[in-house]
Length: 199
Image 1: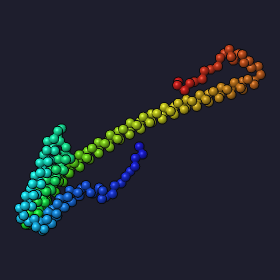
Image 2 (image 1 turned 30 degrees about the vertical axis):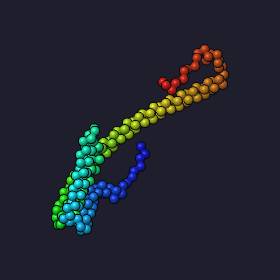
Image 3 (image 1 turned 180 degrees about the vertical axis):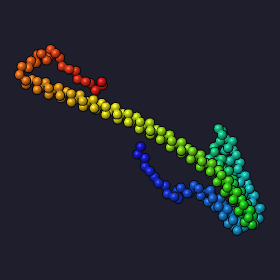
Image 4 (image 1 turned 45 degrees about the horizontal axis):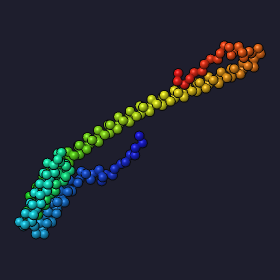
């Protein structure tokens, strides 16, 4: 009921949206640095990146085909590593910048497409949780209001009973001081019954 309201910093809000572009840009930059340091047209380096990318893709395929549908996070990580290694290999091997930039744009678009799907799922889950929490709060608030009304009613009945008993005692005391009062006649007639809180 008394939840803290936490305003997230704009950097924390923007970081997940920028992370895919930063990741693919970092791979491209590292590939171009590797190209400048001797990887251009190096068959050994190209073969190494091919083997690493194929190994990561194979690990992703095995993670996907695992028991019970596999581990989605592990598969996604393996496939992302495979794509990153392939992009770094092409960026390191190619002599021009046009092919690495084309692959960078494609990789960034694919990563944003996958991330948008995850963001949409997270948003749906968040909205569903907030709706469920609101319904639960309203149910609890209704129960609290009903209990408060019941308690107030019991308190009012108890107050009325006390006021009635006080008035009866005052009336009996005042009557006892009157001349010609016979307490035996009152006992024979009986006293009126006090109301109980449950009535």
